[in-house]
Length: 128
Image 1 (cartoon, helix red, strand yellow):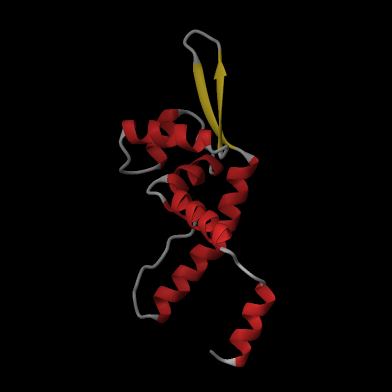
Image 2: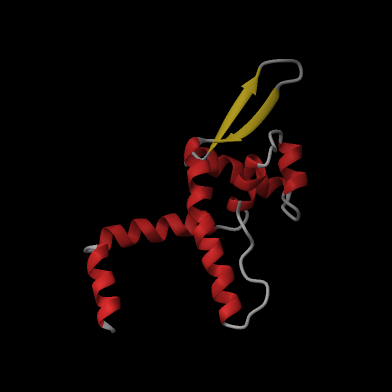
């Protein structure tokens, strides 16, 4: 390891096993298929289930419903029920969901640059 790399690692401080587990769990959840796309659809204006389905190409109704429930349970999406006839249910990204997308953007950009540098076309799509 170069002296510069070693110095940079020292700046980051000690990373313990618990921090690594939390990081891995977070990255796994954020990277689960469709989660980022669903959050991004909400940021771009989707509110009703049908709007999310139209914005997230290729997702089934069943999986979209499951992912919306999971994102809600994690506090990344807020579910709002308007007691009208018929009942209107909307979903909006929470502050935490917006923050997650903000944090994923640099990672997405890194993936795109890394793929380009490695000679792989395409790369990661932008999340914002």
